[in-house]
Amino acid sequence: QVQLVESGGRLVQAGGSLRLSCAASGGTFSNYVMGWFRQPPGKEREFVAAISRSSIRTYYANSVKDRFTISRDNAKNTAFLQVNSLKPEDTAVYYCAASSASMIMTTPSQYNYWGQGTQVTVSS
Image 1 (tube, rainbow, N blue to C red):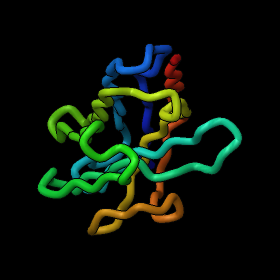
Image 2 (cartoon, helix red, strand yellow; image 1 turned 90 degrees about the horizontal axis):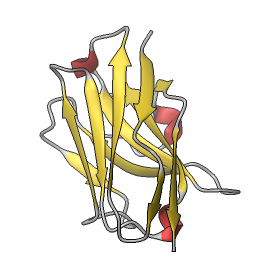
Image 3 (cartoon, rainbow, N blue to C red; image 1 turned 120 degrees about the vertical axis):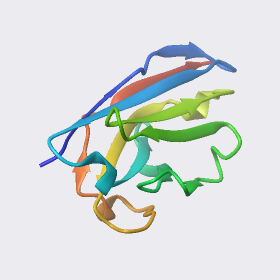
């Protein structure tokens, strides 16, 4: 059983940056593809970014490409999401998730474990 705990979300002005962290415990972190999803107010959860087990491959939603960067540190059992040039439409609860699949996945149902989420609010 893998436990995931996100941190780093807060209120930030448009154009600002944040670094979200996802600390994992209870499993072998390097065995999992890691993903970040977000759920804007009143909307469904959506894919943001994912990274392969060894960090060789990353994949991003078009809406965040060139602004967000996903990374991981397998030695520290932690995944990160650097979010830059934030826009009000980036306001959402951000979740990290772990998938036992062998390749990058983009749909929530393909992820086995989820964190509780961290709130990012971007003011205009």
